[in-house]
Image (tube, rainbow, N blue to C red; front, side, top):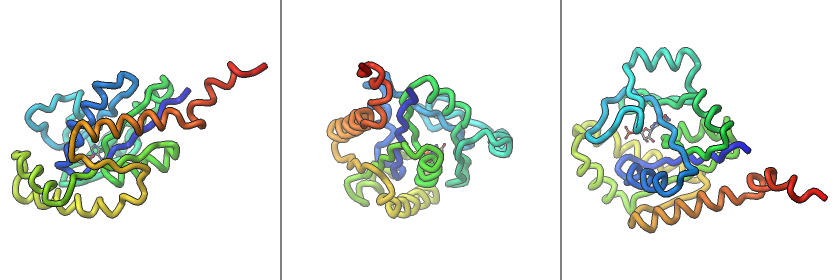
Length: 200
Ligand code: 5GP
């Protein structure tokens, strides 16, 4: 049975990374799709766990070789998802979690219409700004770019299946887990492997 696809989008500074780590740690049936990026690792980020950090030349080679299922250029960096990894992971029946911007989410939904799109929001715009500033490693220009991009991404919310407000991490995590559970219980997903057991 092919796995489920969960695409999570959130403006920078929403607390998405913390939430996703907690979601994945609590559910061994979920596997995180590790993207390629040309940006530098942030403190605490581990190559091969958080991202595959590659040079612009390596990224161009992957992109031009048709090895990326989707890719974007944002904040001056390249971000992209490996096509081969998706195909292999889906065939092995695992449920996959993608951390993508709105353009990546849209592109993946086109290739995999069964994908569940989840948008994570901060409680309000002021809180988003405060969390981004506390991140520390961003230059004033990058901070402004990320805030602007965050505002633009909110316009895409109507195309998403679920919305989670991250005001309280335990509550938001519970909502994410509920979405994963509900998606796995969809008849279109759950019935095919069960159907043979009910043949008379
Ligand atoms: P960050 O630099 O903060 O890790 O990520 C910046 C943005 O890039 C986030 O919105 C994140 O969701 C998005 N992103 C990360 N990997 C990918 C990817 O492979 N494809 C796309 N489209 N967006 C990505």
